[in-house]
Image (cartoon, rainbow, N blue to C red; front, side):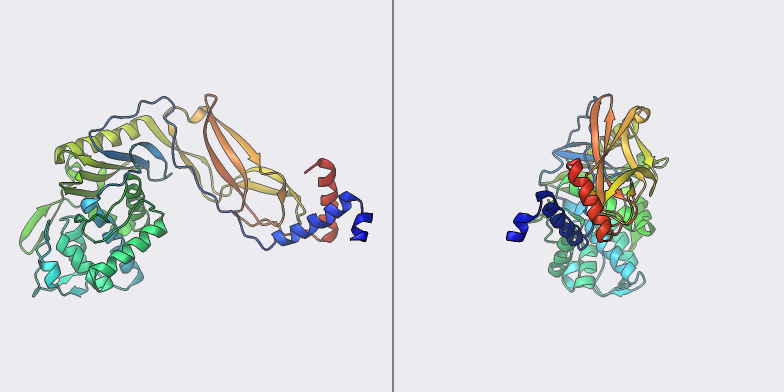
Length: 397
Protein backbone atom coordinates (compact mmCIF):
# COMPACT_ATOMS: atom_id res chain seq x y z
CA UNK A 1 0.00 0.00 0.00
CA UNK A 2 2.93 2.43 0.78
CA UNK A 3 4.34 1.68 -2.67
CA UNK A 4 1.05 2.58 -4.25
CA UNK A 5 1.00 5.91 -2.42
CA UNK A 6 4.38 6.77 -3.94
CA UNK A 7 3.14 6.18 -7.48
CA UNK A 8 1.69 9.06 -9.45
CA UNK A 9 -2.06 8.70 -9.66
CA UNK A 10 -2.04 8.50 -13.41
CA UNK A 11 0.53 5.66 -13.45
CA UNK A 12 -1.53 3.64 -11.00
CA UNK A 13 -4.50 4.18 -13.29
CA UNK A 14 -2.39 2.96 -16.20
CA UNK A 15 -1.58 -0.28 -14.41
CA UNK A 16 -5.24 -0.85 -13.63
CA UNK A 17 -6.10 -0.03 -17.23
CA UNK A 18 -3.60 -2.58 -18.55
CA UNK A 19 -5.03 -5.22 -16.26
CA UNK A 20 -8.56 -4.44 -17.45
CA UNK A 21 -7.48 -4.73 -21.08
CA UNK A 22 -6.10 -8.19 -20.48
CA UNK A 23 -9.29 -9.21 -18.73
CA UNK A 24 -11.35 -8.02 -21.70
CA UNK A 25 -9.56 -10.59 -23.87
CA UNK A 26 -11.67 -13.25 -22.17
CA UNK A 27 -15.00 -11.63 -23.09
CA UNK A 28 -16.97 -12.26 -26.30
CA UNK A 29 -18.72 -9.97 -28.75
CA UNK A 30 -21.65 -7.90 -27.60
CA UNK A 31 -24.96 -9.25 -28.86
CA UNK A 32 -27.05 -6.65 -30.67
CA UNK A 33 -30.75 -6.46 -31.36
CA UNK A 34 -32.22 -4.88 -34.49
CA UNK A 35 -34.98 -2.33 -34.16
CA UNK A 36 -38.32 -3.73 -35.29
CA UNK A 37 -40.78 -0.83 -35.23
CA UNK A 38 -40.87 1.60 -38.16
CA UNK A 39 -42.04 5.22 -37.78
CA UNK A 40 -44.89 5.96 -40.19
CA UNK A 41 -43.42 9.41 -41.01
CA UNK A 42 -46.86 10.98 -41.38
CA UNK A 43 -48.42 8.11 -43.32
CA UNK A 44 -51.99 7.52 -42.04
CA UNK A 45 -52.25 4.04 -40.51
CA UNK A 46 -54.99 1.82 -41.96
CA UNK A 47 -58.19 1.10 -40.05
CA UNK A 48 -59.15 -2.58 -40.05
CA UNK A 49 -62.26 -4.45 -38.91
CA UNK A 50 -60.30 -6.82 -36.65
CA UNK A 51 -59.40 -7.18 -32.98
CA UNK A 52 -55.65 -7.15 -33.60
CA UNK A 53 -53.38 -7.09 -36.60
CA UNK A 54 -49.84 -6.51 -37.80
CA UNK A 55 -47.99 -6.03 -41.09
CA UNK A 56 -44.33 -7.09 -41.28
CA UNK A 57 -41.63 -6.84 -43.92
CA UNK A 58 -40.30 -10.41 -44.18
CA UNK A 59 -36.80 -9.35 -45.29
CA UNK A 60 -36.14 -6.69 -42.66
CA UNK A 61 -38.40 -7.96 -39.88
CA UNK A 62 -39.73 -4.42 -39.39
CA UNK A 63 -43.31 -3.79 -38.36
CA UNK A 64 -44.88 -1.47 -40.93
CA UNK A 65 -48.21 -1.05 -39.12
CA UNK A 66 -49.96 -2.68 -36.19
CA UNK A 67 -52.86 -2.52 -33.77
CA UNK A 68 -52.96 -4.50 -30.50
CA UNK A 69 -50.21 -6.69 -31.98
CA UNK A 70 -48.94 -7.84 -28.57
CA UNK A 71 -52.37 -8.50 -27.06
CA UNK A 72 -52.94 -12.13 -26.08
CA UNK A 73 -55.44 -13.89 -28.35
CA UNK A 74 -56.67 -17.37 -29.17
CA UNK A 75 -54.81 -18.61 -32.29
CA UNK A 76 -57.34 -21.22 -33.49
CA UNK A 77 -55.94 -23.13 -36.51
CA UNK A 78 -53.08 -20.66 -36.94
CA UNK A 79 -51.51 -23.00 -34.37
CA UNK A 80 -50.86 -25.34 -37.28
CA UNK A 81 -48.07 -23.07 -38.48
CA UNK A 82 -46.01 -24.37 -35.56
CA UNK A 83 -47.20 -27.96 -36.06
CA UNK A 84 -46.02 -27.81 -39.67
CA UNK A 85 -42.78 -26.04 -38.70
CA UNK A 86 -41.80 -28.88 -36.38
CA UNK A 87 -42.72 -31.46 -39.03
CA UNK A 88 -40.55 -29.64 -41.60
CA UNK A 89 -37.70 -29.59 -39.08
CA UNK A 90 -38.08 -33.32 -38.47
CA UNK A 91 -38.02 -33.98 -42.22
CA UNK A 92 -34.85 -31.92 -42.56
CA UNK A 93 -33.23 -33.73 -39.63
CA UNK A 94 -34.20 -37.11 -41.12
CA UNK A 95 -36.15 -38.29 -38.07
CA UNK A 96 -39.23 -38.74 -40.26
CA UNK A 97 -39.65 -39.28 -44.01
CA UNK A 98 -42.27 -37.89 -46.40
CA UNK A 99 -43.08 -41.40 -47.68
CA UNK A 100 -43.20 -42.92 -44.20
CA UNK A 101 -46.44 -44.74 -43.42
CA UNK A 102 -48.24 -43.57 -40.28
CA UNK A 103 -50.77 -45.63 -38.35
CA UNK A 104 -53.80 -43.57 -37.38
CA UNK A 105 -54.78 -43.70 -33.69
CA UNK A 106 -58.31 -43.74 -32.31
CA UNK A 107 -57.71 -40.26 -30.88
CA UNK A 108 -56.70 -38.82 -34.25
CA UNK A 109 -59.62 -40.49 -36.02
CA UNK A 110 -62.18 -39.14 -33.54
CA UNK A 111 -60.74 -35.61 -33.42
CA UNK A 112 -63.41 -32.91 -33.63
CA UNK A 113 -63.42 -29.85 -35.87
CA UNK A 114 -62.01 -29.61 -39.40
CA UNK A 115 -60.73 -32.96 -40.61
CA UNK A 116 -58.74 -34.66 -43.35
CA UNK A 117 -60.78 -37.89 -42.85
CA UNK A 118 -57.96 -40.30 -42.13
CA UNK A 119 -58.93 -43.77 -40.85
CA UNK A 120 -57.43 -46.15 -38.26
CA UNK A 121 -57.08 -49.13 -40.62
CA UNK A 122 -55.74 -47.10 -43.56
CA UNK A 123 -52.09 -46.02 -43.25
CA UNK A 124 -51.32 -42.51 -44.45
CA UNK A 125 -47.96 -41.00 -45.39
CA UNK A 126 -46.26 -38.08 -43.69
CA UNK A 127 -46.49 -36.14 -46.95
CA UNK A 128 -50.23 -36.70 -47.11
CA UNK A 129 -50.64 -35.64 -43.50
CA UNK A 130 -48.75 -32.41 -44.12
CA UNK A 131 -51.08 -31.57 -46.98
CA UNK A 132 -53.98 -32.38 -44.70
CA UNK A 133 -52.64 -29.97 -42.07
CA UNK A 134 -51.73 -27.11 -44.40
CA UNK A 135 -54.37 -27.26 -47.13
CA UNK A 136 -57.34 -28.91 -45.42
CA UNK A 137 -56.57 -27.70 -41.88
CA UNK A 138 -57.23 -31.22 -40.60
CA UNK A 139 -57.16 -31.59 -36.83
CA UNK A 140 -56.92 -35.36 -37.26
CA UNK A 141 -53.79 -34.93 -39.40
CA UNK A 142 -52.22 -32.74 -36.70
CA UNK A 143 -52.79 -35.40 -34.04
CA UNK A 144 -51.33 -38.13 -36.24
CA UNK A 145 -48.18 -36.08 -36.91
CA UNK A 146 -47.84 -35.07 -33.25
CA UNK A 147 -48.07 -38.69 -32.10
CA UNK A 148 -45.55 -39.77 -34.74
CA UNK A 149 -42.97 -37.18 -33.73
CA UNK A 150 -43.43 -37.09 -29.95
CA UNK A 151 -45.45 -40.16 -28.94
CA UNK A 152 -48.41 -38.12 -27.75
CA UNK A 153 -49.98 -34.73 -28.40
CA UNK A 154 -49.14 -33.65 -24.85
CA UNK A 155 -45.44 -34.36 -25.41
CA UNK A 156 -45.62 -32.61 -28.79
CA UNK A 157 -46.98 -29.48 -27.09
CA UNK A 158 -43.79 -29.43 -25.00
CA UNK A 159 -41.75 -29.39 -28.23
CA UNK A 160 -43.97 -26.61 -29.60
CA UNK A 161 -43.32 -24.45 -26.54
CA UNK A 162 -39.59 -25.13 -26.64
CA UNK A 163 -39.49 -23.98 -30.25
CA UNK A 164 -41.63 -20.93 -29.44
CA UNK A 165 -39.14 -19.99 -26.74
CA UNK A 166 -36.20 -20.45 -29.12
CA UNK A 167 -37.89 -18.15 -31.66
CA UNK A 168 -38.52 -15.51 -29.02
CA UNK A 169 -42.31 -15.81 -29.13
CA UNK A 170 -42.72 -14.34 -25.65
CA UNK A 171 -46.51 -14.01 -25.86
CA UNK A 172 -47.18 -17.57 -27.00
CA UNK A 173 -48.03 -20.82 -25.22
CA UNK A 174 -49.36 -24.05 -26.76
CA UNK A 175 -51.31 -26.91 -25.20
CA UNK A 176 -52.23 -28.78 -28.41
CA UNK A 177 -51.29 -29.18 -32.06
CA UNK A 178 -54.65 -28.20 -33.56
CA UNK A 179 -55.64 -24.85 -32.06
CA UNK A 180 -58.77 -26.12 -30.32
CA UNK A 181 -59.71 -23.75 -27.46
CA UNK A 182 -57.88 -23.98 -24.15
CA UNK A 183 -57.33 -21.23 -21.55
CA UNK A 184 -53.56 -21.85 -21.66
CA UNK A 185 -53.38 -21.90 -25.46
CA UNK A 186 -52.64 -18.38 -26.70
CA UNK A 187 -50.44 -16.17 -28.87
CA UNK A 188 -50.19 -12.63 -30.30
CA UNK A 189 -50.36 -11.17 -33.79
CA UNK A 190 -46.70 -10.18 -33.58
CA UNK A 191 -45.63 -13.69 -32.57
CA UNK A 192 -47.63 -15.22 -35.42
CA UNK A 193 -45.86 -12.92 -37.89
CA UNK A 194 -42.50 -14.08 -36.54
CA UNK A 195 -43.57 -17.73 -36.81
CA UNK A 196 -44.84 -17.30 -40.37
CA UNK A 197 -41.60 -15.60 -41.36
CA UNK A 198 -39.60 -18.47 -39.83
CA UNK A 199 -41.53 -21.04 -41.90
CA UNK A 200 -40.79 -19.11 -45.11
CA UNK A 201 -37.15 -18.47 -44.23
CA UNK A 202 -36.19 -21.87 -42.82
CA UNK A 203 -38.12 -24.21 -45.12
CA UNK A 204 -38.50 -22.66 -48.59
CA UNK A 205 -38.59 -26.17 -50.07
CA UNK A 206 -41.93 -26.81 -48.32
CA UNK A 207 -43.46 -23.34 -48.47
CA UNK A 208 -45.14 -24.07 -51.81
CA UNK A 209 -47.66 -26.27 -49.99
CA UNK A 210 -49.29 -23.12 -48.62
CA UNK A 211 -50.27 -21.93 -52.10
CA UNK A 212 -51.98 -25.21 -53.07
CA UNK A 213 -55.62 -24.35 -53.70
CA UNK A 214 -57.18 -27.76 -52.97
CA UNK A 215 -56.31 -31.29 -51.95
CA UNK A 216 -58.07 -34.63 -52.34
CA UNK A 217 -57.71 -37.44 -49.82
CA UNK A 218 -59.87 -40.48 -49.28
CA UNK A 219 -62.02 -39.41 -52.23
CA UNK A 220 -62.86 -36.07 -50.59
CA UNK A 221 -61.66 -32.82 -52.17
CA UNK A 222 -61.39 -29.81 -49.89
CA UNK A 223 -60.38 -26.27 -50.93
CA UNK A 224 -57.73 -24.21 -49.23
CA UNK A 225 -59.68 -21.83 -46.98
CA UNK A 226 -57.33 -18.95 -47.78
CA UNK A 227 -59.50 -17.22 -50.37
CA UNK A 228 -56.78 -14.65 -51.13
CA UNK A 229 -55.03 -17.38 -53.14
CA UNK A 230 -57.85 -17.04 -55.65
CA UNK A 231 -58.28 -13.26 -55.40
CA UNK A 232 -54.68 -12.03 -55.53
CA UNK A 233 -52.00 -13.73 -57.63
CA UNK A 234 -49.24 -12.24 -55.49
CA UNK A 235 -50.50 -14.02 -52.35
CA UNK A 236 -48.83 -17.44 -51.96
CA UNK A 237 -49.75 -18.41 -48.37
CA UNK A 238 -50.34 -18.98 -45.49
CA UNK A 239 -53.05 -20.11 -42.99
CA UNK A 240 -56.59 -19.46 -41.85
CA UNK A 241 -58.19 -20.02 -38.46
CA UNK A 242 -61.60 -19.78 -36.83
CA UNK A 243 -63.36 -20.53 -33.58
CA UNK A 244 -66.28 -18.76 -31.96
CA UNK A 245 -63.95 -17.05 -29.47
CA UNK A 246 -61.10 -16.28 -31.89
CA UNK A 247 -63.26 -15.03 -34.73
CA UNK A 248 -62.07 -15.29 -38.31
CA UNK A 249 -58.28 -15.10 -38.62
CA UNK A 250 -55.78 -15.11 -41.47
CA UNK A 251 -52.02 -15.03 -41.80
CA UNK A 252 -51.22 -14.07 -45.39
CA UNK A 253 -48.00 -13.54 -47.32
CA UNK A 254 -47.55 -11.80 -50.66
CA UNK A 255 -44.54 -11.47 -52.96
CA UNK A 256 -44.46 -8.51 -55.34
CA UNK A 257 -41.19 -8.21 -57.19
CA UNK A 258 -38.45 -8.87 -54.64
CA UNK A 259 -40.52 -7.66 -51.70
CA UNK A 260 -42.38 -10.02 -49.38
CA UNK A 261 -44.83 -8.81 -46.74
CA UNK A 262 -46.64 -10.83 -44.08
CA UNK A 263 -50.00 -9.75 -42.67
CA UNK A 264 -51.75 -11.12 -39.61
CA UNK A 265 -55.44 -10.27 -39.13
CA UNK A 266 -57.17 -11.69 -36.04
CA UNK A 267 -60.73 -11.53 -34.76
CA UNK A 268 -62.61 -10.39 -37.86
CA UNK A 269 -66.29 -11.14 -38.32
CA UNK A 270 -66.43 -13.39 -41.40
CA UNK A 271 -64.35 -15.23 -44.00
CA UNK A 272 -64.98 -12.42 -46.47
CA UNK A 273 -63.96 -9.72 -44.00
CA UNK A 274 -60.71 -11.40 -42.99
CA UNK A 275 -59.72 -11.69 -46.68
CA UNK A 276 -60.68 -8.10 -47.48
CA UNK A 277 -58.89 -6.66 -44.46
CA UNK A 278 -55.78 -8.75 -45.12
CA UNK A 279 -55.64 -7.57 -48.72
CA UNK A 280 -56.15 -3.98 -47.58
CA UNK A 281 -53.24 -4.33 -45.19
CA UNK A 282 -50.92 -5.89 -47.78
CA UNK A 283 -51.81 -3.23 -50.35
CA UNK A 284 -51.05 -0.53 -47.78
CA UNK A 285 -47.57 -1.96 -47.20
CA UNK A 286 -46.69 -2.28 -50.87
CA UNK A 287 -48.13 1.14 -51.71
CA UNK A 288 -46.49 3.23 -49.00
CA UNK A 289 -43.15 1.51 -48.29
CA UNK A 290 -40.01 0.40 -50.11
CA UNK A 291 -37.47 -2.22 -49.08
CA UNK A 292 -34.05 -0.67 -49.66
CA UNK A 293 -30.54 -2.07 -49.26
CA UNK A 294 -28.38 0.71 -47.86
CA UNK A 295 -25.15 -1.22 -47.28
CA UNK A 296 -23.66 -4.56 -48.33
CA UNK A 297 -22.35 -7.22 -46.00
CA UNK A 298 -18.79 -6.48 -44.79
CA UNK A 299 -18.85 -3.03 -46.40
CA UNK A 300 -16.72 -0.65 -44.31
CA UNK A 301 -18.75 2.39 -43.32
CA UNK A 302 -15.78 3.93 -41.54
CA UNK A 303 -12.54 3.21 -39.71
CA UNK A 304 -12.67 3.57 -35.92
CA UNK A 305 -9.66 4.31 -33.71
CA UNK A 306 -8.75 1.27 -31.59
CA UNK A 307 -6.93 1.61 -28.30
CA UNK A 308 -4.53 -0.99 -26.84
CA UNK A 309 -4.81 -3.20 -29.91
CA UNK A 310 -2.33 -4.81 -32.30
CA UNK A 311 -3.94 -2.54 -34.93
CA UNK A 312 -4.76 1.14 -34.47
CA UNK A 313 -7.93 1.11 -36.60
CA UNK A 314 -10.80 -1.24 -37.33
CA UNK A 315 -13.39 -1.32 -40.11
CA UNK A 316 -16.95 -0.80 -38.87
CA UNK A 317 -20.09 -1.95 -40.69
CA UNK A 318 -22.55 -4.84 -40.89
CA UNK A 319 -21.82 -8.56 -41.28
CA UNK A 320 -25.00 -8.91 -43.37
CA UNK A 321 -26.66 -6.84 -46.08
CA UNK A 322 -28.25 -3.90 -44.28
CA UNK A 323 -31.74 -3.76 -45.78
CA UNK A 324 -34.47 -1.57 -44.36
CA UNK A 325 -38.08 -0.64 -44.96
CA UNK A 326 -38.57 3.06 -45.66
CA UNK A 327 -41.56 5.22 -46.51
CA UNK A 328 -41.79 5.32 -50.29
CA UNK A 329 -39.78 8.13 -51.85
CA UNK A 330 -37.64 8.71 -48.74
CA UNK A 331 -34.59 6.62 -49.66
CA UNK A 332 -32.67 9.58 -51.13
CA UNK A 333 -33.51 11.72 -48.10
CA UNK A 334 -31.90 9.44 -45.52
CA UNK A 335 -29.07 11.04 -43.56
CA UNK A 336 -26.72 8.51 -41.95
CA UNK A 337 -24.86 9.48 -38.77
CA UNK A 338 -22.22 7.01 -37.57
CA UNK A 339 -21.13 7.14 -33.94
CA UNK A 340 -18.38 5.04 -32.39
CA UNK A 341 -18.62 3.72 -28.88
CA UNK A 342 -15.52 5.52 -27.57
CA UNK A 343 -13.14 4.41 -26.42
CA UNK A 344 -13.03 1.29 -28.66
CA UNK A 345 -10.77 -1.04 -26.72
CA UNK A 346 -9.01 -4.18 -27.89
CA UNK A 347 -9.38 -7.11 -27.95
CA UNK A 348 -12.19 -7.02 -30.52
CA UNK A 349 -13.96 -9.97 -32.12
CA UNK A 350 -15.57 -9.87 -35.54
CA UNK A 351 -19.23 -9.05 -35.06
CA UNK A 352 -18.68 -7.21 -31.77
CA UNK A 353 -20.78 -4.08 -31.40
CA UNK A 354 -18.61 -0.97 -31.57
CA UNK A 355 -20.94 1.81 -32.65
CA UNK A 356 -24.34 3.01 -33.73
CA UNK A 357 -25.76 4.07 -37.09
CA UNK A 358 -28.48 6.69 -36.76
CA UNK A 359 -30.80 7.29 -39.69
CA UNK A 360 -32.51 10.66 -39.92
CA UNK A 361 -35.26 11.55 -42.40
CA UNK A 362 -36.42 15.14 -42.84
CA UNK A 363 -34.76 16.06 -39.55
CA UNK A 364 -36.50 13.31 -37.54
CA UNK A 365 -34.73 10.29 -36.09
CA UNK A 366 -35.95 7.23 -38.01
CA UNK A 367 -33.98 4.52 -36.22
CA UNK A 368 -30.76 3.44 -34.53
CA UNK A 369 -28.88 0.30 -35.56
CA UNK A 370 -25.82 -1.41 -34.04
CA UNK A 371 -22.61 -1.31 -36.08
CA UNK A 372 -20.07 -4.08 -35.55
CA UNK A 373 -16.39 -4.82 -36.05
CA UNK A 374 -15.72 -6.37 -39.46
CA UNK A 375 -12.49 -8.02 -38.32
CA UNK A 376 -10.66 -9.17 -35.23
CA UNK A 377 -8.15 -7.00 -33.41
CA UNK A 378 -6.08 -8.83 -30.79
CA UNK A 379 -4.63 -7.19 -27.72
CA UNK A 380 -1.34 -5.31 -28.19
CA UNK A 381 1.77 -6.23 -26.25
CA UNK A 382 2.62 -4.70 -22.90
CA UNK A 383 4.43 -1.64 -24.27
CA UNK A 384 1.75 -0.98 -26.88
CA UNK A 385 -0.95 -1.08 -24.22
CA UNK A 386 1.14 1.14 -21.93
CA UNK A 387 1.64 3.78 -24.62
CA UNK A 388 -2.07 3.87 -25.50
CA UNK A 389 -2.96 4.03 -21.80
CA UNK A 390 -0.76 7.13 -21.47
CA UNK A 391 -2.38 8.74 -24.51
CA UNK A 392 -5.85 7.93 -23.20
CA UNK A 393 -4.97 9.45 -19.83
CA UNK A 394 -4.01 12.77 -21.39
CA UNK A 395 -7.05 12.73 -23.70
CA UNK A 396 -9.36 12.06 -20.78
CA UNK A 397 -10.68 8.80 -22.26
